[in-house]
Image 1 (cartoon, rainbow over the protein chains, first blue to last red):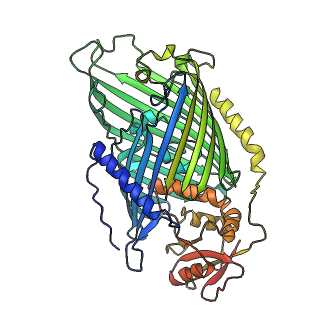
Image 2: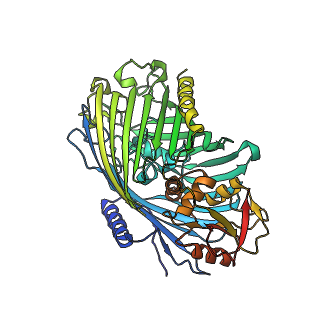
Length: 404
Length: 148
């Protein structure tokens, strides 16, 4: 059986996004009774093509402040649709492509894109190379941050995995080397190193005229310790970004540059039905500009933020996964206190129930109690400054996902 | 200081569970045998090697040939037992692991087959294949290996 796909440039049109959604929905419908992902071909001598996909629809409601969308009135702008095609061409060579479209308030806007695509040559277990658009290995869960079925929580801890930074954090176009090294009695080490660039779409932001990312580079090392189920690791990402923008109250564009170094330490423990995780991150972001009118002397040019969370999930029954986490964000570590200004902290206490209806369909319910406003977007809140927004507030989410 | 507090909290949370391995629906009383293609020179495999092979972290036999793991389907009590005993995770946790791998484009899970006979047929047919079957399965066409 032959299947041909046209994977051209990710056209930025709503129409294509809807078409992708319909295509995946049709595929899901057609495969609803199947016991596993579609595998086309696969006979001896054939090159098989694995097809996987998902459709997610969520709802978000909040008190006090709008969060991620116009959530105070309730919002259904919370959709994710993806389909991927992977083929193992030889024992060592694999190719893959995922098409993805999503919307979460102002982010995504149902634009279809090639989420990832790559050629992957795994020469040995300890050395492989991928080229293409490859997801960034940052922390434990960045690569699966848009895959609802791969976790319990609806929203990953937003201090470490902010959806508003998805374009910066999800994938890079370039090269990655990776490997898995058996350390015998000391466990095993998984490493990833990458370098490339990032495409950032600024078409929805009229104040930004152009963005260029000369480089993004980084890596992740994960040590699988001799304690079964316990892995520890660290990730670093360095990014340089140049942009032209129109400053407030100005008519001509100005240029500026941004350098960021993001680091995160990670710990995860998986034993039978229990998963515990904790991560602590520090992001150092510096801004430089030749235009002194934009950044006059005395302007703070380097900001260090601190972020972290602890989480627990337990597979309590075949159909039930409860989970909870506490996440904290301090956008400026110099002023970080637990009782400080609202706009310099956000404490997020979250609880989730995931119900697996069957092997291809799940439903989730989630509640958050928030203390602080640091993660809020003033443009979603009538352009009111973040420091005057409601200090204690809550968010409720529901989401359903079908996948194969 | 905050990082230290965070680490202390994590260690405190993890400590009791490191000694506890309860699986409410573990397939107790079910046995399994690990089988390989008859051309495979191995007569025994280490448990850890087996776990890494089924998670595709290790993809080569010691002689350099490709490992081709094959699973029973997720409803199988034999798979549940194998998953808990060898991989150290529930079947659902393993499936969750593969969701993460598949949708981030890093690899594909082993094929899932419905019966012991299907597994035996697959292993007999493919060099480098490894699977597991129930204690009652007919394993004449494949080779049983010991798990150390």
